[in-house]
Image 1 (cartoon, helix red, strand yellow):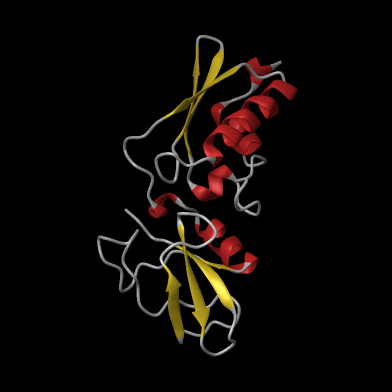
Image 2 (cartoon, rainbow, N blue to C red; image 1 turned 120 degrees about the vertical axis):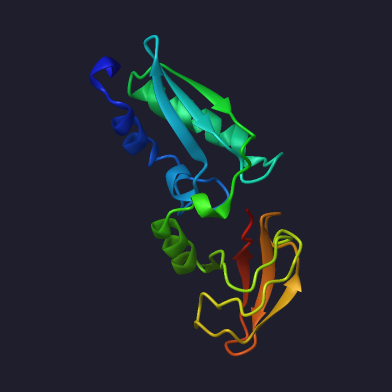
Length: 164
């Protein structure tokens, strides 16, 4: 059954695999899915974590295997650490989904090369679009996010850290 599927078909199918930490994002939106290759009768799937040691990767790998098994698609899944994941790999659609979910997407303006630990200025509140915000903590609900507070609407929110 899987032999009539193309690599493009598998990419489309894998849109169903969601990030367990941010369930509105697929692994395609997030840029974690890096490559799909058909080799010797098996689809070889390559994924890259948002950061080394990300606990979501085991869940993502198992969900990929389960989804493809349910669709009778033979596969292998490989974790690739180099090149390191970057927020540049996120889709624009994924960034909009983050904002709609209440998480400020990564911003490029005013960000240094030490983004993971730096504090970017003027982070836009995903709730009211104000730039009158302040950093509360370098680490939010997960290590890849910082906690901010909007000084206008007074709501706390996560900011998905930009890193390259």
